[in-house]
Amino acid sequence: GTIKLPIVPRPNMAICILGDQHDIDRAKHGGVDSMSVDDLKKLNKNKKLIKKLARKYDAFIASETLIKQIPRILGPGLSKAGKFPTPVSHTDDLSGKVTEVKSTIK
View 1 (tube, one colour):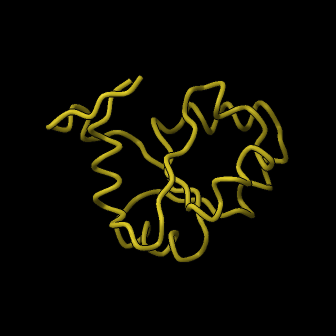
View 2 (tube, one colour):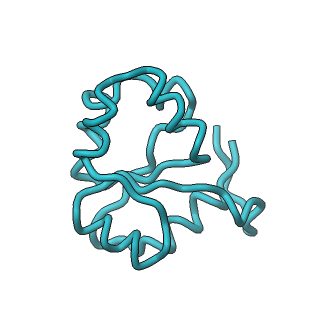
């Protein structure tokens, strides 16, 4: 399982936002890497590229609108790596969600 800690054990953890345009804009504003649906489709279910993506980032956050499509677009790559994205809605505070993900350990 995962445990949420009161402090952030890895402050420089690499996080990527997989989202629609609204969340990508919020990610840019917060200085977090982001990828759109089109960027994900370019990976074309290529296992090597998906593994590379999973290795590049420590965690992923995805728009609620996109979360159901991710297994369809990427295949099982992220789940196998144990990095399936955490959902975030448009009303959630993105920087708060990023901090929450950084302070959660497996």
